Each structure stands twice: as C-alpha cells, then as structure tokens.
Amino acid sequence: EERSLLNIDDYFALIEDRLPSMESQACADATSGFVDMTFPFLLLMNQIGSAIYCATSIWHEQKIFHLSSLGTPTLNTDLRAPLTKIIESKMTVLVGFNFLLFVYGISCTFP
Image (tube, rainbow, N blue to C red; front, side, top):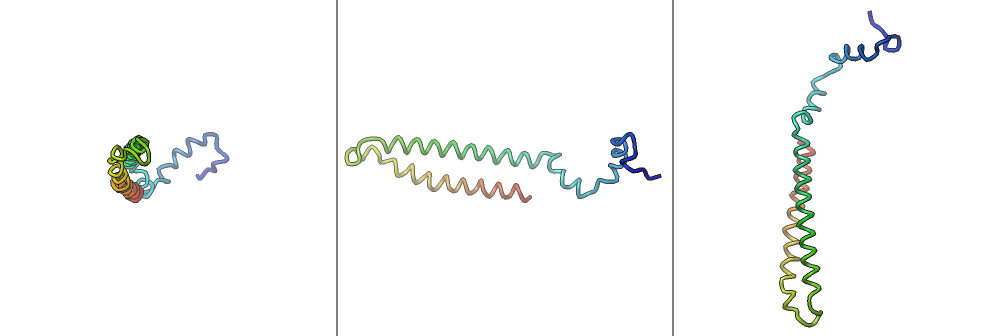
C-alpha cells in the first residue's frame, strides 16, 4: 500500500525507507571525490601554492622598495644596481609561477 508523505506520522522513517530507491550511480560518482578527499586535497595544494606566491611577491616588493629608496635619483645609483635583477625576476619567475597556479587550479576544477 502506497502511503502519502503528508498523511503519515513518522515522515523521516518513510524517507529513510525510500532512500535506497532514490540513490543512483550518477549520485555516487558525483560525491566520490569528496569521500576520498581528492578534490579537497587538490584545493589545499592550490591554496598553499597561492600562499607561497603571495609571500614571495611581498618579499620582492619589500626588496624593490628598499633598494629604490637608497641614495638620490642622481647620486649613488650603484647602490640600486641589484634593483633591475629583482624587478626582472619578479616579472618573469613570479608570472610563470602564477600561470602554473592558474593551470593547476583549472585542472583541479575539471578532472
């Protein structure tokens, strides 16, 4: 006998009885990444990489600020000689690392 969900006393017991018939393979496949912790682990690795990128970028900015504040614009330019190397490394290495983080994030989103 089919009972209506509105006319029963124990609504949750009836739902638990019907739950196995509502499960499908597609539902199990969609949630398996969360059960085995693959997707959260990939997100954690992306966040760690982003934190390393941010810390390295802040370090470069601090060095650039420090070196560019030495001397005057026309005197003691030899004190700022390493400035170009730091700017070049920030503009090349960090941009490449940021691109790798982006590609990694995209690959985590679409397994």
